[in-house]
Image (cartoon, rainbow, N blue to C red; front, top):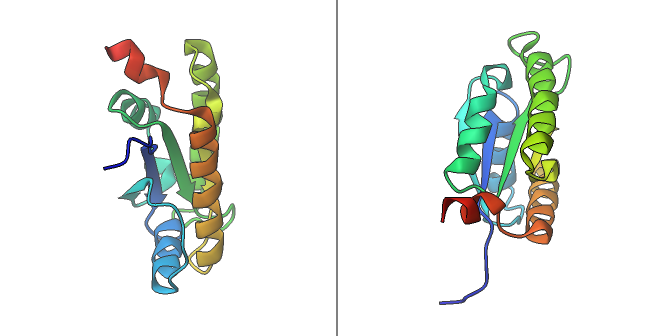
Amino acid sequence: MSDEWNPKIQAIICNWCSYAGADLAGGARIQYPPDVRGVRVMCTGRVDMLFILKAFVDGADGVLVSGCHFGDCHYLEGNFKAAKRMFMIKSLMKNIGLDDKRFRMTFVSASEGAKWGKVMEDVSAKIRELGPSPIKEFQK
């Protein structure tokens, strides 16, 4: 077994667009790092800031929220509401001393399997660059 550190990335994914995009990427055999563990929600508008903070407390090195493009939300304005919350999360992370680059929000549609793979590569590379979450050290 390798001693190489592998990041734990929690993805909170919209059922209608990003999850379908991830499924398309899998069906098309698009390669991307296996560091991401996804949780499907019906809409990113349902994502509470506490979900993101809890992911970090539970050991995530990074968190991704991914949903429909603006104007394509199945619930009309859920992604707008989520985007506003995500700005607040970044601000909160800065205030508590957690690098806000550990969190990212993206927009991937059901037809963008290749984009999903690219997003996963980018997120994984950024978290690898940042290293393990400092919250793990606080918990020790």
